[in-house]
Length: 292
Image (cartoon, rainbow, N blue to C red; front, side):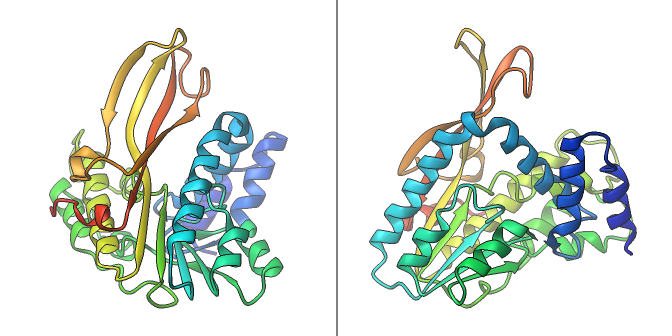
């Protein structure tokens, strides 16, 4: 058994029914070889647990995500294959609707959960879950022989090649609310050569830019759903802080936008609600990202 697998397992040893559920889930997923070492399995389990607590607060966001995907499905003239990048548990992806529109639905992520395997079982010959690294950088980072400088780690994300889409070029590719996390989570687990408060942010930005460039290279239709800004809002509804997330990587204004009540008080803080502004960028609007 791999050391990183044991580390995850020990860190999730059952102490309550909720923790037991997370522990069992961590054992049941299929994951990219580097996903456990770089914290991505833990993050997958944490998202599942947060949704269990926040289902009511997340409902509107998930409905808006479903609506954007359904709209793009209806716009697609060719319907042989659709690819969902960052599928996760498909909370924000209306898989049955995609299966009704397209001949093949590829659900890709670094961690493939039992939820995706259930979709495969219930929609045979239509839905396929694929363990796939959308950054192209995880294996390189996991093999790093020592601590990394900020520029070195960011450069790996920026220059990595994810390769062709799993299953072949799709008629529609959907990046499903994973852009802000695609480099953030692995960067948090990387050994750092020296303390640098900008290390994680620079890695996250480099990975996000690379992902959008990859999306822009796809010949079919494209839908990018991603966090546009992070907000802290007081209990009285006053905006305390707004941190742009899309602007630094050069994304233009989204084609549509909505709010995601990610963590109402006291989930994230006892002082404020954590809210995300989520955007949907369509087709050529994705190509307008400024290259790093």
